[in-house]
Structure formats: structure tokens, C-alpha cells
Image (cartoon, rainbow, N blue to C red; front, side, top):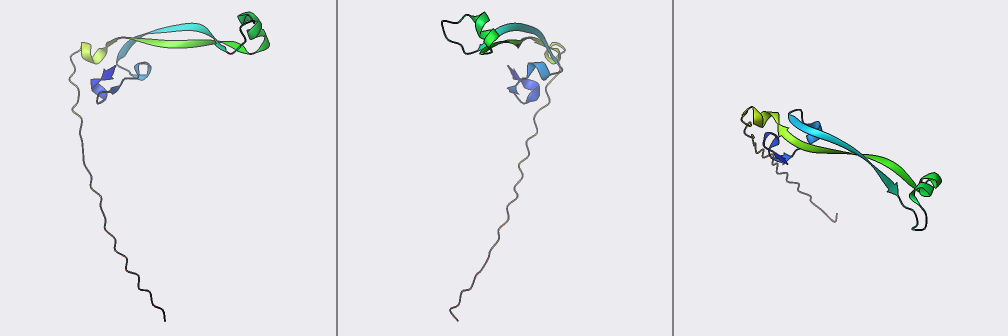
Length: 93
């Protein structure tokens, strides 16, 4: 989701204080193991393991619900240009 309160950058739902979200945790089996081996054997031998994956589902934004206007972004262009001239004289003597 693009957040209008963060200059339309991608919203980090779990870190945004104004987002309401649902947290879903699910368990998956990660790792690699041959086709002839069962998942339980692979877990016992250490080639596979159980991971918990956390997913966040966006529900609503408190700022949008309360009709808070986004702050217009302030763009400043700073031109720091310097011109340096160096003269080198070479002599054969």
C-alpha cells in the first residue's frame, strides 16, 4: 500500500503507528531434503526445520479514518557547485 502520509512510499504496516492490521502467524517447513525422505525424517536429521512466518494484513489507517490531511512534502533543491582551476607548468630545465 502506498501511504499518503509518508510521501507515497511503500507503507511498512508493522512499523506504522497509525495503521490497524491483523497479525497472522503460520508454521512452515523449510530446508531441502530428497523425495524419498519424509518430512519428519528430514527434521530429525537436520536437513529441514520448522519456521514461523508472520504475515500482516492491512485493515485501516487511523489518519484516513479521522480525516487528517497529509502534510505536503517539502522539496528543496540545493546547488553546491564549486569550480576549481589548477594550472601546472612543466619545464624541461
